[in-house]
Image (cartoon, rainbow, N blue to C red; front, top):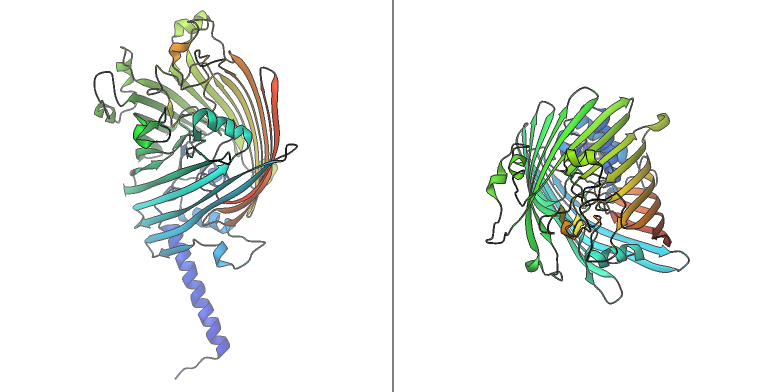
Length: 539
């Protein structure tokens, strides 16, 4: 009989366990029909791969999917995130809380947790964000996958976020704000989807989540700042061309006081075609249609005629006076040298060329444009990312006759979070070293708000454009002048890449003046969180 010494037995067992762990991690990497987290730190890592390597993902269509990347690239990214300087060989900090994997399938479960403490200097007032929840995901035979995220929160935000909540009755991007006795709010956030890929040419997703179309920090087409919504998304891939059909169900809070039965329903159809014209150039064509679920005579529901998947097929009919809201847009990306990219967008809500030529400030010339520059490995420094962006939106863009047909959802805009009637400049620097992340950001925004509820100067997309004071003489930034300078420095350490659990801290300096009256604040924050999505407070 063959016998082994204790040391040999331990060594053999260690090798077998190591092989088993490698096999399970390989299953985890190779069997995922899942979306990639959209938090900006994770997104920047995958952006670098999408912009600079040959992948099936398109940089302007988010969230990305793991199956759009080859297995070697996914493995390389995961290994770079598993390098642990502070904590070594700690299973809790390297894997999901619970998971089961086979060569073709995966199931995992993670807790969701967030506690961030805010302190406003000078006034010494404190606030916090506190959330707890659960995340469940699965992937089967590389064709079917899904995820569910449930998060219960109660928070007492800094004063400038509270002001936004009091205006909208919702926590930005996260849910209806139910007031608590301590001056804070409780709210619920839920998201999830099921994804099915029957062939390499098609992917279908059904869920309750957000989408993002564009290459910028902001987007003028469809963004992820508003709350989650119901959707059906069909992605068609032919050669290097991607075509998105997105069907959505939006809800408006109105005077519901948080009663979901009193939310008003409206629907949307979106088409987006992304085409690589040349090796260095890609262009995207965008169309959206928003309509009220009820008209003056009946419960209209989902108009089946909008199921037509062909882009730019419907707008011809709207030129004859349809009450529905149509927007057209274009997205452009150009590699101009090395790992540097120029990008931009043009959004057309409504316009007449004759009125543009007349230069009389017709209210109905509603357009927006974006131009930006981003790059990777700046100055040859690996994982040093930069971005500069300018956004311009004319008054009344995204507005409509009523909030039931405007370009918004859950009391927040569907495109730029600032609404319209604005100019904005953004500068961002991000750097990653293994699990350490540093980000510096500055946002300079100027916009014109309304003096009272009975008039609209075109910034609030939830006000009817019928409240405009005149037909002509409209200029961008009209109304009450607002100037906002938002500066933030944030540092974080990735405790667990599988759960995206992070320690983070930083400082926010916000300077906001209304009609030259300042309202400034400096805020220190520190916390621990599982970061799966972006929460925008910089507007």
